[in-house]
Length: 173
Image 1 (spheres, rainbow, N blue to C red):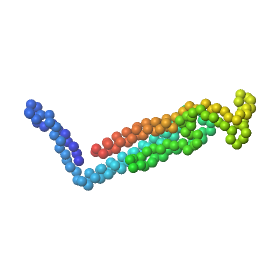
Image 2: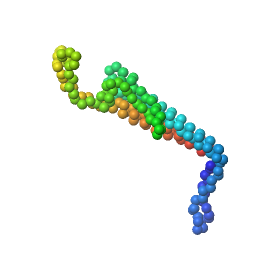
Image 3: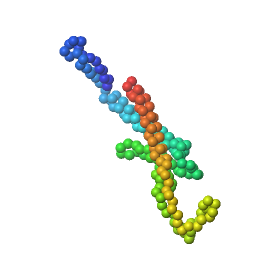
């Protein structure tokens, strides 16, 4: 289907300036074929853009950890996955480590108490200490997964915009 726009009448005529739309119809089969092609290309562009976003999220976690990593195990455990849902696709960024949530979201002050032994034994300012419990002041939130999510979203938007403009230019031919 091609859409042709034009003005109707001559300057000064009562209907001048009215826009006339005329359509040239293609066969229904050709229209359906183009529609199916557009749907498939859009699906592919969405999936590839999600994968680009996932790669950017992992790169962000690895290269800009915000906190000082001790072993790198927390960064290595971060994974991304594109999940298809009834409403489309989502990019899931997750980290299964037990301590990932407390580093990402922070933790409140809490008591650390002895459990299996009679005392907690640790070195403090060069001296060995023995305590039944200590007060841990908590940790600040580093939001490394949130930052990865933002970076992934930005990369997805840029990649999708680029791919869709390419598809649109091919579709209008």
